[in-house]
Image (cartoon, rainbow, N blue to C red; front, top):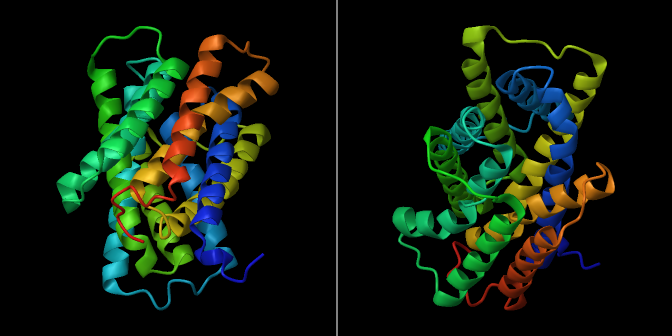
Length: 294
């Protein structure tokens, strides 16, 4: 492999697909854990463990941090944390399937937020790909729905996630990925602890839940967000958003292979739409997309 693999957009995209596979797998292991402890408390422990592990591995990684890097990293982490909080409270009033679909709407909102915040335009072909990915999400998730407080809260989550993707795409190439991802993860840990504090922060109740906290904290948070931060320094926010719609595809795949769920034509159709969208947007190597950075 070339010595320049760290600057290869294709390697970055493959790594992002790997991240979505990890996140898809964690859907299975997290479900049982959050049935045994409050969701916000679980998130607090997950991101706290990730922060501790990253600091332990590289205790001096923040030594050369600038004030602007601190503000941007903590700012993006705060936005991400607010997204998780909105999603968590939204789940109290809507189904997991509807929540998954609306959260996945970040793929539509990412180019919208890019235009609103940065005045970066997205061409017609990219919007067609985004629409195809959205159809795939709908096939995977929807079975009828109505709009209420839960759906609105979850839409807020999708907006926060889209802003996070846009901001990460704009700033990640300017900073060392490890330190910049640690700032974000630490900010989410603090936000989650604050959100969980009013009811008292519950400890994971048994070794099984601690194991899930460890898996999600290390693999699905510390490693995954580091990879995402690095990858988004090489690819556009819109391409990253389309690739990250693979998460529900992997979640469905693992649910069938490991969880014993039934594979339906609807699931296959949704997965095919998302895979096609990811293939099309990357076929042109992103040259047809107005990139947030090159």
